[in-house]
Length: 112
Image (cartoon, rainbow, N blue to C red; front, side):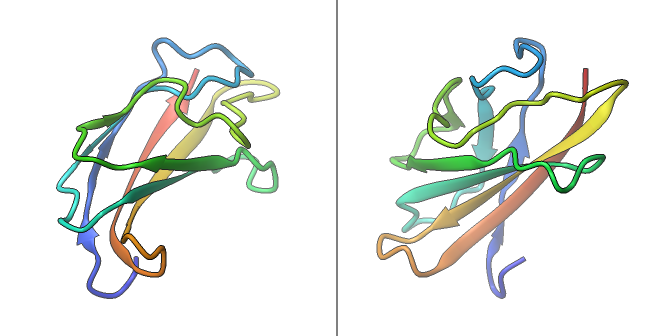
């Protein structure tokens, strides 16, 4: 976590997510610091760390959630080759200049 960054509360679930889909789920974010202009999101598969699931950036204007499908370019949804994998979203709150992480939060959930 970045020094002096606030702890964001991040929550999501896979209930409406298709296997190997490209539409990101709704990601709920709380405790976003004042001055945040962008939420940067990254998805990691703990069971296949070399697979790039990408993420994206969303403009922040006080909303409580990143809407479903907001991570368009570069997002690859959960696609475990077999069994259950654990996936983690990391969300960073970035300032208006794009040079300072104001907050960070993570949440890991198994899929399917």
